[in-house]
Image 1 (cartoon, helix red, strand yellow):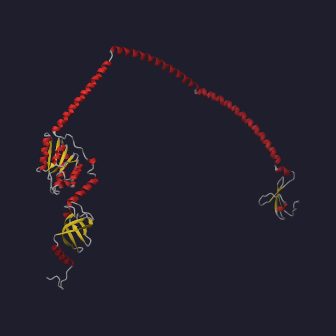
Image 2 (cartoon, helix red, strand yellow):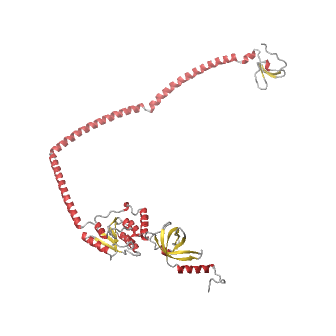
Length: 449
């Protein structure tokens, strides 16, 4: 059927499906380079972002099944090289790139993941020196976490046997490369800590590519090392190889053989150290005995005849006994004198005697107070009479009794002293020696000047 015939009418869904088929068939495997923007990781586990350059942009999606295989975490602004195929998202009618693999442009994905994880764990303090545990000087048992078939385990066992044949070795076999190896290594560290039989652990493997060594760059291994109560030596790859395990461990060894040498000194070295310490101890003991011998001689010379010493001590006892008797007599005398003084004070402070004395003082003071009161009353009575006589002389009533009167205005009680202040018809109250009369002004005569 010719779908482009004028009589053929397509639905939107049909046309979109046809376009998707064309795109998926012709753009099945692509490598695209661009800068990441609008990056998001929703709860579904998928990854959505836009890949752009200076002239265009392309919507991209990476599904959960591919996201979980990523060794690093992309970020906005990061330049990526993407492998995938073109498809169409029907609901929006947009074409998009279905991503299957990502890697940073210019830097490998594993190297980017290594740097990101190193920065993250360093920020959390997993590599801090204060978390590093010291290695035991004389371990009784060494735990080794590595492959049972690799060259590393043979190197470690050969070195330990040569240096200290009686040292016990506890091997925990694990895979050291490939998917799931990191979980096995972390589980081995946790199991050896639960058993608590080893005094120190060696974790590592021989050399290889970055991909081969990658299990020792996993976060799960770093955190297992961090929570370990047993000190751990990291021995991953060659001297130039560095891993996250090296930073998290308490000590890094450049090779597995070097790790075995760091665990414990050789028996010959220890024997030499013991012999040197034995010689040093012998010299110290000889010097100490010489000093003690000299001290004993000095003490022997300073030691006197015990009978003379007892005589001196007996005389000392007699002297102390006499001083004790004298001290007791003096003490008794002083206490008797103090008792007599306190008794006299107590007699003086006897409440009965004090009450009698106070009663006598009260009677004297009462008699004296009575005389003072009578004298004060007579004096005040005399002064009152004198003041009454003077007041009588100055009283206006005596003036009124001689025929004078006081004129006041009835409305405000103001005393009138000048005839000019009155006019005919004004009311007036006149106070006499006996009583008051009201009157009205008929005429007035001005004062003569």
